[in-house]
Amino acid sequence: MSGDELRAAAARHRVQVMIGTALEEVVPSPAPVAAVIRRGKRVRIRRRAVVGAGLAAVAIAAVFGPGLVRDVRGSAPPSVVKQPQVTVSPVGRANRHGVIANGAINGRPWTIRLRKMGKDLCLGASGGPSMGCQRSRDFSPGEAPVTFEGAGGGDRYYLAGPVSARVSWVSVVLSDGAVLRLEPVRFGSLRWVGVMLPTRVGLAEVIAYSAGREIAHAIPFQGTHGAMPSIVGWLRPGQRGLARISKLVGSGVSAGRHWSVTMHAGPWGYCTIVRVAGRGASQGCWPSASVVGGVRMSSSGGPVAGSPLPWWSVGQVPRSVTYLTFVISDGHTVRVPAVPVGRERIYSLVLGAKGLRVLRWAAHDAAGHTISSGVGLPNG
Amino acid sequence: VAVSAQSDAEFTEFMLGCWPRLVRLGYALSGDRGFAEDLAQSALAKAYASWPRVARAGNPDAYVRQIIINVSRDRFRRRRVDELLTDSPPEIPGGECAGGLRGLEDRSVVLAALMSLPAGQRAALVLRYWLDLTETEAAAAMGCSVGNVKSQVSRALAKLRLNTDLAEGVLP
Image (cartoon, rainbow over all chains, first blue to last red; front, side, top):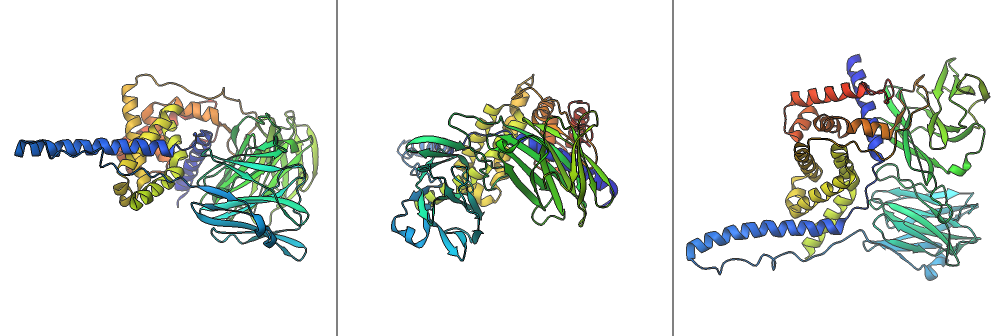
């Protein structure tokens, strides 16, 4: 590819990201499948009526009799609408075998279970594509009503985790309006809930109840089509959380690939999507309540799966910070803006070459004064 | 009954997968959310009416997309004045562009800029850049020549470059 072609491709990618980011904020209402099918059947009937009328006219002309006209309404196909149907069943005695949740998707059964592996707990699921097993030494309900872990593949994914002591049950509201009730099941010293969902049906809300009263709700973030929802921030009953806003906080070319970092603030908290051209996207979230003073590393990681980029980092800084400088191990200093998103400012940094690392950082105000500085990454 | 149920299930799968994208396409072309959802519903209803044939052809996405493009094009032909619709007042980006970072965009600014373009230019830009169609595919979808698509895209970009709200360096 020539230099001109590369530049043109880069420019095209920037416009694509710009338009795509803007349009992602157009959140459609749930897909009205039943209404569309009803409307489609009416279209089909009208078409048949037109064809039927044409045939009838020919027949009438031929035999001077009306008897050949079909009753097209009578020939309409039977109405069978099959939405993805998710059910959750009581676990009952299966709990003895580590089952914490079970149910079915369109009649295909699924099970989520826990196993003890030495000192670890292993969370796994069956009834979908192979999801393997997640180990964790640190399963803990913490402060959140439910601390979800999840895994997915193919056309379904599961979410499961321990609930805090005060939670008596959890409601999961799907984007098609269906509501699933999850009853906690005890395993070891904790109580657990879990559910398996089709990737095509979004997760609209999770609500935790205590003795019949809502104690908290969470709006998940589902950034890219088919991505698992992230649930990190919980809101009090009636609390609306942050207003929804999306912003491209950085983009560029590293290691020959275009990348972009988009920040999505909303009732879920803050989520970043790091996209690398041709290599997919990586999503990271944190609750808005975690932002307290000082320069704070909120999300860092990378690379995006399969990406040639060795490292990326996104962080939150106080409103007074307008830009940060990073001294990189190859001697360069990189200056990145702190972009206002919601109530915070966000910076993003992507390093293109392997082996590079950040030696020092400094946060500056609009006048260029250093507000804070440190070695390595901020809070890293 | 079994065939019909299977066909409905396939259509449902298809619709759930493409619904957000189709609504966004309708919105990008029309600038009107309500109209965009109506448009997507009508296009999908037409696809449902001929579902076995549409599914057999192998590219139901393109079929529905084409209906949306046609209907919104006809709508623009009927309308003389384009509305400028934004959800919220644009926020002024306060950051700076430096180092390896190129642009700072507020979606409302981008959407407003997009909606300020004439319908033809906006359609060409959306089809070429957002849907990533080739010039030939975009021309076929818009029912015009390849040259026309090129000039519409070029004019659209030129107009966006004049928009001072869009961060410098983002546009080619």
